[in-house]
Image 1 (cartoon, helix red, strand yellow):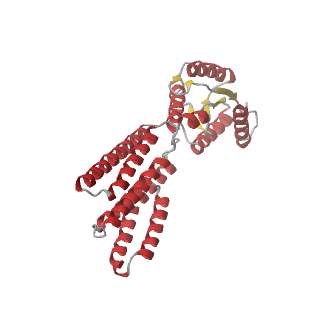
Image 2 (cartoon, rainbow, N blue to C red):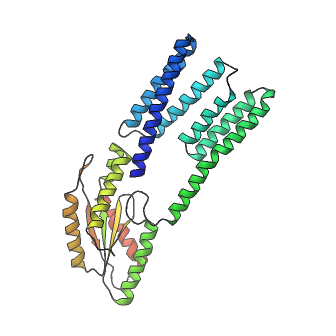
Image 3 (cartoon, rainbow, N blue to C red):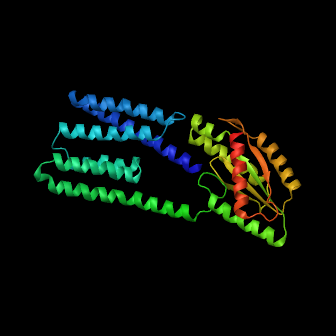
Length: 308
């Protein structure tokens, strides 16, 4: 959640700085008397203000204002180069760099590849050294996001926790549940699992955006983890479904945990979604039941709760 907030603040600062620079450029053209060139940066300044308002609005997809900001960068640079052909070629690298900052890696490579093809088709023959420099610049700009994507993929592969909340990832959850299942069968111990479903989750994302969904997940995990034992396991089994693994717990003990969690979650109130609503059901393994069959029953119970 802190990462999302930091990213939103960074993009807010980016939109704000873009508006200030574009307004300063517009005023400079006005002071120089270049009234014909004034229209494009003036229009882009208004467009950037719209992008900032869209970014701050609830429920707006972040890709839309970022795309408009990228288009604005291309329009301003191409307009300046068209008005002044002797403009330093350094400014041509600005939209290329903005592409890698505002778009995912492969989307940025696709956009820059199209731009390079168009440049090679439209540029004169004596621009070959500049074209080679643009290709080298694109490759250099692609290195940081590629390394970031590689490290993020490695972190996802080795991190046992879910990427959105303080709960185990589905793969780690099933592995730990299998260990507890085998342990209970070998040592004749008891085992119970609580299936939790959040019916508000999809509605929160559609109406209030990713931040409300993250807040809802965080509230659930905090309430559950604070009221469970250290060896209890909370994992995210689906988009809106969680499994709480309770080792050495009988059916009556699981029912007591269920009632305690329902009371605690009902007292949790969020700003966007109001009172937190959670459906909780118990599911215990049957005698001589295989682990695969038990997992199927857990998934069926979660589907029934989601449809009910």
